[in-house]
Image (cartoon, rainbow, N blue to C red; front, top):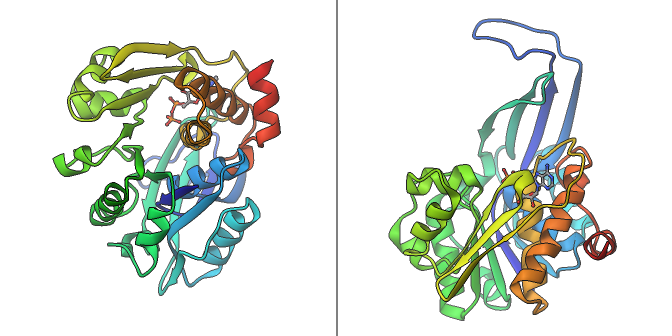
Length: 295
Ligand code: ADP
């Protein structure tokens, strides 16, 4: 089973031909409100790929909270450990311009109130094979989850986003780090992903650097680095591609697939997701992933 300790956000997306400058008002073309948040995205990705997934986190006592919870439940994610707390749910205010470039304001809301584990969380984490962590919850909560995982021998997978300096204790508690190339560069000061991965191996035993359309780079202390090219597809929306990759990768590893096969399988899932618009809506099912990975 897979436990996710992470964020849930309602993504409020405004589509505009050209983003407004400071003080300017522009007329947009469309608006969409869709469930997101890196934690929830990874949970949905893993569940759709066939994983048994438990989500730990919080939504607010508002209409968004109800929708965020039901989106997870519809995907098959267990939500008993997703608390409803007073105040607003997390929101991401996203502007997408005519070229597809975006700018984003995240207001943590309920996510910011998750500062540690609640009753029952320790045993939920302990019952899992993997704990998925990102950095959209307060660091104290991420650390508390990682400590619980280590105490129970549960493997931790950390997506270091939004990127920030990682405390040494968190790195010590991380089994697999999955930055994209920008995050890998920010963490190490090295723009070459191979060099960055090597540097990161001083702190964690295994690293996967995602390289967008160029695929992924896997590095571990005890073996030669491995690159897996991405399937060539026509990308229409890469939102949550990284989250889809992490969710699918964890499912594949949890099934005991060898690393190269797990990387190819997760690359197939992520490549399927970028061909459809949306975040959670764009994530493939297990059958779709299986068929595309074999093709
Ligand atoms: P993030 O979404 O976190 O920025 P990336 O852009 O590196 O991360 O994308 C994550 C993964 O999604 C990639 O490693 C790749 O497997 C897949 N992916 C992203 N963009 C494409 C694309 N244009 N074609 C095929 N696969 C893609």
